Length: 248
Ligand SMILES: [Zn+2]
Image (cartoon, rainbow, N blue to C red; front, top):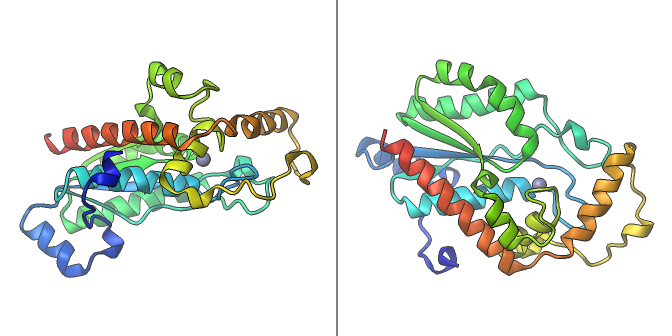
């Protein structure tokens, strides 16, 4: 995987000092910003709730490193719009308006600092609708170049066919996300102690219950090799998107 062999550059805003950021803006080398958006929500029995946030940060950070020193990554939005998972205890959710407005405020903070190209890279499907519905309004208010994408938009049907035995992508906590985690942050995968058959689940909707069981089974197809291949595709796709924005 190229991202493990590449040198690691400091690109995370929250780890930078004000001097590092200020000088990057003032001398013109910081041109674009990526805002990762995720969730803190149930990811079936075996995957940590941070998955969507951590995967979005992973893709954003590696894309920014490929474009170093032109791009930095802001603090992620780690709580998303997850009302549909609230029957799983532990999920955190925010209202669509609040989520979109918080994203707006992060983008606007970067605008006020002098950034002219902002790309939100999303890792949680539930965030996409609320942002897309408000995209025109957000752009009009921001007055700078602003795009929103979910990183799995990188995957063509051929790529999914090549790497995902289940054929399902992104799905939820299934083969794709579990593979991604095994490649990027294996400490988030906890098969130990999992017993789906006896788990006290609280899924009221029968269709969701069926899907949950299916995704649980398909997650067992996950491998780190699949995750490395899929995450590289996403990193390259986001890198190209950010580079294109900065050429405008
Ligand atoms: Zn997820």
